[in-house]
Length: 154
Image 1 (tube, rainbow, N blue to C red):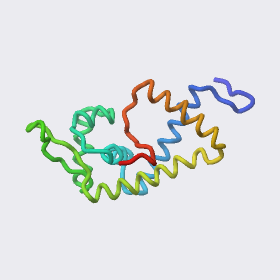
Image 2 (spheres, rainbow, N blue to C red):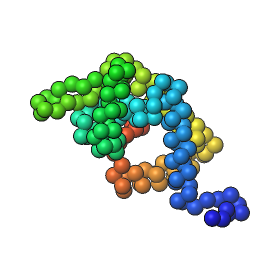
Image 3 (cartoon, rainbow, N blue to C red):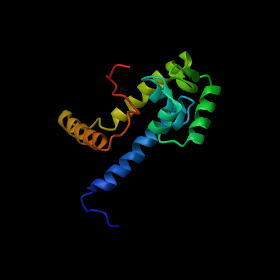
Image 4 (cartoon, rainbow, N blue to C red):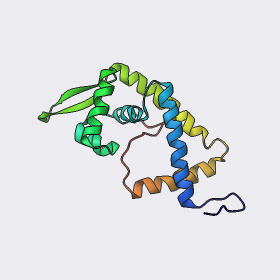
């Protein structure tokens, strides 16, 4: 692999490296709130609404056994609860507890602040361009809503 002389990198390297950067921010923010990265993701997803286990697994991209373990650990910490699914007596929905909702709000706000800082040196037009291009990638590939916009109602 060769480096470009002017420090510019291509789209593949830029996207992959930015993924690592955002994940590192997410991990650090989660740790400071006493969460794992996966628990932080779970709380953020559940901020919008309760989910059934299969929906939740698909949204988070987790196998059933991994999701069950994640929900079990997060439930033991008093952050989520399983409730009967009103449409299917054999199924449960996972929802935030009041404690979980409070922690989710704090974690979410802090994570948004830190991710926002990554583009602090950009002009407003550059930020809009970046958001538009990344938004197209997300939309074109039908990425589930695992993190809401900071100004989007919850």
